[in-house]
Image (cartoon, rainbow, N blue to C red; front, side, top):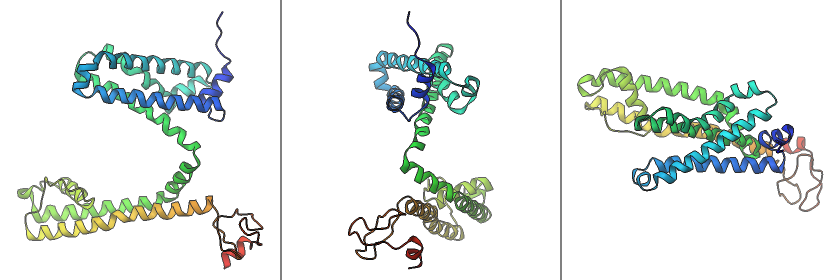
Length: 277
């Protein structure tokens, strides 16, 4: 009689990434997710769907059965089943298996793409694995350290677009397309971000002057969040990789607790002395 593998073994493989089997399972899962999304993309192209519709449908059901089996096994081996089912990733795992079943209950092309787009949410399972990559951890710490500065920046940016939008609403008015303050703020956002769709344009000289100032400020503003994140990223990299210099050969890349240079063998100064120097 066929028996299921031990729950602890399944849990280690499916929910963990510390073992070779767990890493292989995660890699296979990522490939399966990307392939299923690729099938969805191909099915959205008319001529491919007409020519290979049966094949794409078969692949869709193949991935659906795989995700259904995986979801069932996750529930089976989970140490806390209700918590997993109600968790964010548990809901996403469920949504990964639902589209094809829901398509049977929702006939009609208008519902088809909406339901199948739920499959794209499965990519969050890939993002969950990013926390195990050291380089990703450095980037995430940089973004976390920058969050307050970025919040202040976006608050100031919101104030600017509200100010410029309100000015254009008063100067141009509804007759030139600025029918309301929200519409004018929309214009200010697409202008200050240098997108400029061109569906609304100032017609008066004063309005064009304000628009020119808005555009110039847009170029300057782009550099602000980049500089904030870059500065924090540089600090995190310096914390991750110590750039102490050897006083004899002036080469860097030494460990924080290094007493001797790994290049020339010279004695290293302690970190406090390096900082004072």
